[in-house]
Image (cartoon, rainbow, N blue to C red; front, side, top):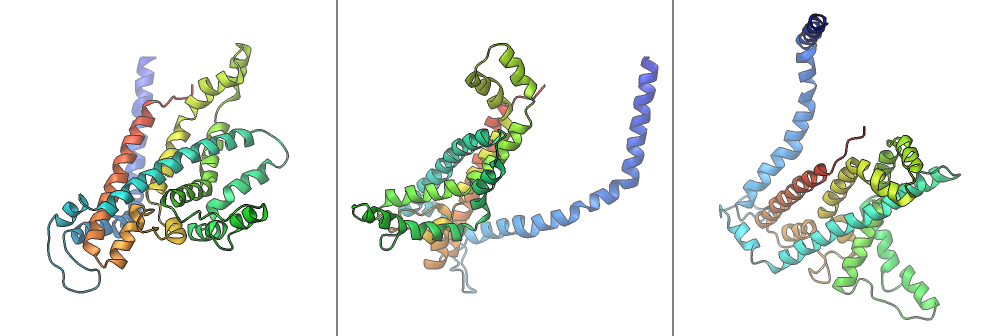
Length: 309
């Protein structure tokens, strides 16, 4: 039996080598277009941006002077950058938490069979198909002080108009809600795919052992949804940390600089302040921050991953 097994293994390895020899070069060539896209649209802009961050270029003139790490040192004392960083963390982690809770509840509810569930899935997912600029405009018309739909309802009920976007705290909260609700559908789809990949036999066995619905959720659903959690959380966190469109449309970073994210502050530094060097340094910092958070989060989520038997 051992000799037969070894012979079969050698035959399989020989067939593999023959296949690689015949198709290997062709398969390698298929990577070239993707590699070119990465080089042109990802690696080159990153290297170029880092090079600009070491200069005092204003973004328009041909003249630029080498300043080394002066732009990075300046970031340590920039109060507006500090506020933007805190806002970025608030938008990123806040919207990620909200999206996971709402999306998981929606997925659990819509994973059951009932009439109209596909329609409900489409309705929840629909906002993700809308441009963030359009979504931000729609919500701005809802929350604006004069002629805003929400204030019109408040006045109709006998109340006074509320300046939802006039204060820093109120505007940040509105931005957080808008960003969270727009992409709940994406996480819902991820969780639905994860739920439908869990075998019903686990729940049937747990029911026979007397486990309640809550016990089944924590002991079966949550552990086996770990890959879905990892995908959804990382995806939403990256999107939240890069938030720009909604802020630009709804508040333009105001009042003052109080609602800026790092992305919108980079835009204001480049175009309003005409300081491409400093804006590039901020961009490099944002890239590094997102990369670090992504790696750490992936490692933490992978530790608790449970493989389905």
